[in-house]
Amino acid sequence: MIRSKERFLQDLEQSLPSSVNKTEVIKEYNLHIEEKLFDQPHLKIEDVLEQIGDPVEIAKQYEDSLLIAKGFVSRNFVFCNFMFFFIGGLLTVCYHIFEDSLFSDAWGLLAQIPLTIVIVYTMFWMVLGFEIGREYGLLGKELFSKTVFISLIPNVLLMMMTLFHFIPVQWFQPILTPAFIMLCVIMTCLIYPISKLFYYIGVYRSV
Image 1 (spheres, one colour):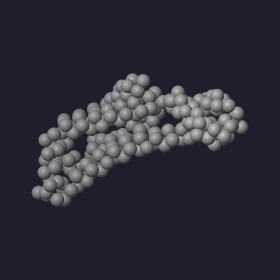
Image 2 (cartoon, rainbow, N blue to C red):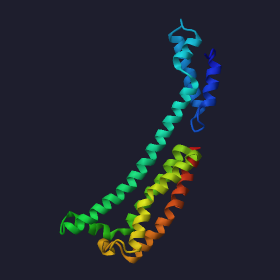
Image 3 (cartoon, rainbow, N blue to C red):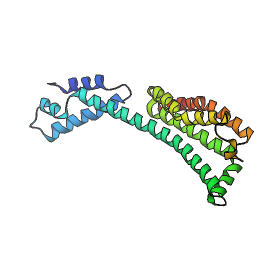
Image 4 (cartoon, rainbow, N blue to C red):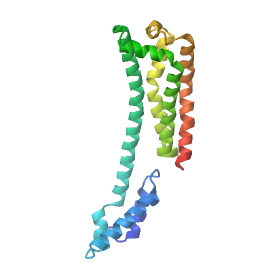
C-alpha cells in the first residue's frame, strides 16, 4: 500500500506513457486527492489513495485509451478514402446504366472540373497528415505511415488496373483523358511526401 501522496504521484508520473501530458495529469490527480481529503476528513491518506487505485493501473488506462484513439483515427481516414472510391465506382456504374438521368448530369459536371477533383482530393491527404501530426506529434510517425500506406491500397490498385487496361478506359470517358491519367499517376506518387510534409507541419503546431 502506498502511504504518501508524493509517492503515489511519483509512481503515476513514471508509469504514464510519454505521449501523455504528464504535468497536467499529475496536477489533476493532486487536486483530486486534496478534494477527497477535504470532503472526507475522517479518512487517512492511505485510505484515499486506496480508493483512487494503483498508479500503475491508472497509467495503463491512459495508454490503452491512447491506443484506442489512434486506431479510431486511422480507421476513419482509411474508411473515408475507401468511400471516395466506392462512391466514384457507384457513380460510374449508375452513369452507364441510367442514361439521361441525374447521374449523367453529375458525370458531366465532374468531367468539367477534373483539376478541382484532384485539388480537393489532395487536400484530404494534407488534412490526414496534419491532423495526425497535430494530435500525436512525433509519436504518431508510425501511425501516420501505417494509415497512409493502407489508405493508398485502392489508389495503387486502380492506377495499375487502368494503366494495364484491366479496366476499360472507355468506362471513365470523358473524364479519363491521357493528360488526366498522367496527372493521377504523378499525384499518386506525391501523396506520401505531401502528406508527410503536412504531418510535420502538424507536429510543429502541436509543440
